[in-house]
Length: 492
Image 1: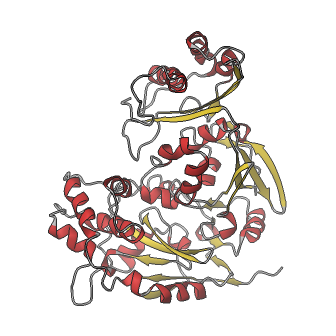
Image 2 (image 1 turned 30 degrees about the vertical axis):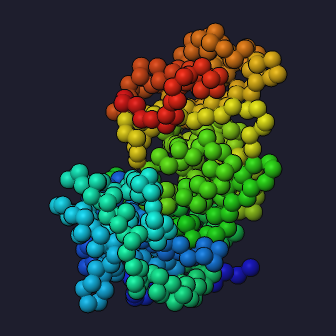
Image 3 (image 1 turned 90 degrees about the vertical axis):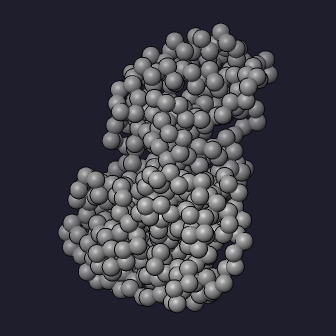
């Protein structure tokens, strides 16, 4: 099948069509807005997707539906925006200067202090308002996890968010013009491959998933960029050359979710946000962990496949996926193979993935009747923080209350996400009691020799891992009289 190619990217920026033929593979949306288009309401703070000052909305058509999501412009690359609608804070106020209800609420509740972070908060609240016009406080807090206010104006900002629901939507641009925007984006999404630039500045947007396989097979040294929540920092913080680049966030074929009696299959391009409803339904034990993966902007951009593919020893999802017995489907050209998640991670920075091969999907088996499962993320800060230790536990008890099978995996304890084989062996065949836990605790030093870094000391990590096993035991035996907050942050 012949694939047609064009050498330009096209997207909507507020109310205008933008077409670019000369754009670098690593140009960020933030730089494009501020330097090229002089839209300086979007601020630069951290340049790593943590502070939210650069928040904008990006609308995209997925399976025919138009969805607007808050994203970090500082780590989103312009090349990934083909057939999208970028909305900045400048688009909210009316032509006569009348403020949008979200902006007016910020004024009325005195929610802006120094003002630097305010445009980012406005855009995050705007995205929340469109999805949930009457949010509870917890919904508001979740939407603002990725926005920092160093003037400590959070209480007023929450009041602003609460007051917006009582305001008239009026002629909100994204509501009034929705049908027209959908029509424009459909016209822009023409099914062609985009190929721009040469050498290190070349980037490609494949036409579909099959075209992606062919493009990567022909360019095995290219950097795959899905959500750019990790790769974006390679550029903004480490000044790395990452070209040529293959962008994949637009590929509907990698964003499919399939649920059946066997479990879940998540395409590698499924974002954390897209996966959350089905994850919460089938694995409710993962719900709160999911809400602590970055901030809302990171969850909107980041993909589960990317979290697995990059092989980070402190990635949030691999310990839980390993404990659940997940497998990775890899593809190279037309050929596919499946690898158990635990065997995909070989060593620090090394995964079982050949040149030209990519993670296509992840399969998570359904829990069996009677299996006990939990996951715990320990970090210095509750929200939007890197794990010091992440532990996942799955235990199957027989009819006599003995451990028939145990699968335990940790992140932050080794150079890769790793199973605790000796701990599992110490538990298997034993009664699920305190004596078994004490024996298993002694086995941790066989499995792990953790490092000391700025997140936590080696001694702290080892003690924490042991205590998480005890916690899992207490929570699954009913011996704990005080209900534990399973995902509470622990100072390192």
